[in-house]
Image (tube, rainbow, N blue to C red; front, side, top):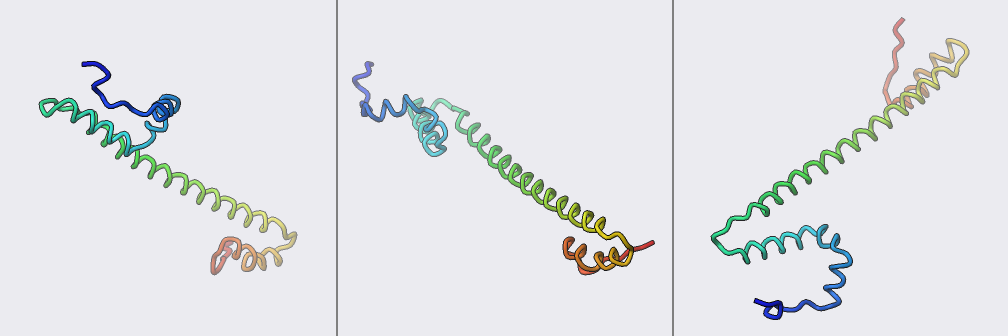
Length: 122
């Protein structure tokens, strides 16, 4: 049958879709609706696994995004910890004599490291 038997889409909407198809491809709900419409159009005797595969891929993508966020957060924590250690070491290198060094261990170095006590074992 010809194109005239199908409902016509508005020209402005059609042009918008043609000019920016990525907007549709990036919209999860819209893509689900299109796949469901395609499955309905094929009839009940045909099994299309694309929808199921897409759902599984979306679930994997969601898990990967969660893992990615966790890795990024851990990297920032590691960087913050490294900077904290560097500040403490630089502070320990400041004193030229042993007494101020010991005083700094229990004072500023402990504060930088956010610890209750610092013990020096010789």
